[in-house]
Length: 266
Image (cartoon, rainbow, N blue to C red; front, top):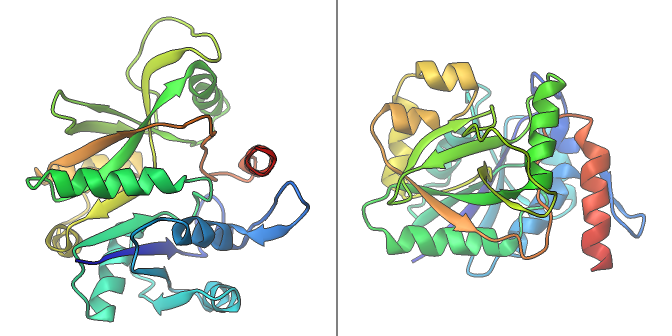
């Protein structure tokens, strides 16, 4: 049985062109690109057989090969990271047990998020894919609401059923709670961590489905699975004192650099 991580990365982002090559400074002053820090996060995961950067851009390919990554070139026609992962796996001509899609904008993803995700998918034979969810503290909820109030598209939240099946994912903060929370207080809001683990047949089927209305409106690729009646297993993960945030906007860089500094100092 084999598990591979694919890191989809494109240069021509509408909201943040060139985002994978954005430079992030750590506590010691070391500067590394977003794609390199995401690749390092992937290399730190136990039980992974291969880590691949999938891109359609030569600038990202050259930067990735310079720090030692394996790169697979994909079409510029890929509409999102899941389609890019599917094409990369097809181009490789392999059929692993599980394919993990680690978004190239999530360098703060702890290794145990992905390890727990893989274990959750292995334990649920009825699920074709799984994704991690993290309970928000009052502080994280406030940060998500602040992004929305400022008109920024930030993190994604999710609601799920009793069997941990994803019911809906949104860039709005859901569910509505009608109250405030202390910074360290747990909330009923769950942040969707932008990582997916697919079984190969579920991943291969995805590009053949048309883009759905909800996927288009929210700009969330995972909604295509729900719109085609495919179950998404939500695997709850724990922060263990670590902060987590994705780089969605240029304004996120100082926040992520501060979190990197906290990690280095811990």
